[in-house]
Length: 331
Image 1: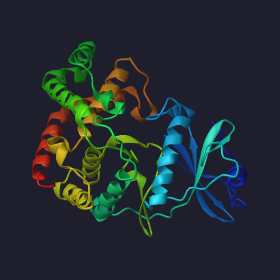
Image 2: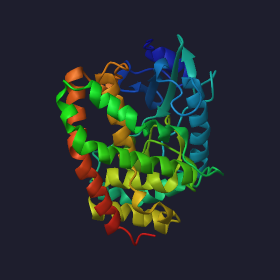
Image 3: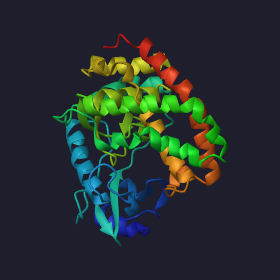
Image 4: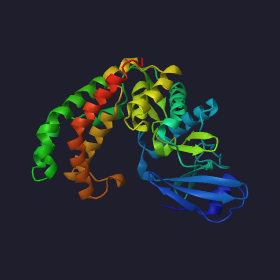
């Protein structure tokens, strides 16, 4: 993949004269660099073509077109987020194409070490609600990406049968009832969720930058549709680290700002869907049915992750049920 020169980026985005080189700060789903110029400090993002459409269309450009349109809506609404820089000759909205690779630039957000999750609970609850109100979807039922976690019993049984010689196959008897029950409930949710909205799609701790002026929500590339209540519950669980008071604090603010959590009942914390989907993807890779993406690691790491996930699944489900019961009066 092409790594641009500081002059290429500065010229395409009219950033002034570069003061040094591009400083690589992250490599994940994208490359990211810091660039200092005569006009300030900037965050440069370079995309990998293999990322694909994710949630909108088949291609990276399809996803980014939908994401940037929603990002613009959020920017106009005053959501706390970075300031994108418009290029002089855009390929698509805020994007430029250099040597067949897409790039974007934001004004750099100075950051400090993030405080404990509870310290941003009020901001997080309000911001989620603000984002969820930007573009509601007039339909019932969850989007197709939710269904990636759904596999019939015979598929799971076949995977475990093929894995007889692998240590985690011995966990089949204890885990399969929990997997199938959770899968059945996910399928039901896919048909009845009444509150589908377009959303940021990646409310994670690494996407909240603590600036001197307060939290800032970054990385809008994963925009998608989701249930507002189920995303709120999932995000509150992640940021609250599963601790009832931390989770309650976030969801109380979300509800007070106008969010509706009541319909979800015991399904409010939808983290199980992700765990089961990731588990199925790891098993397919371990059995040679799929190629491992970068985040999975080597075969030994994958088998260890499968074993851990299977061993902890019953306890995790019990914890989620208990947590929901302790927060039953939020609606």
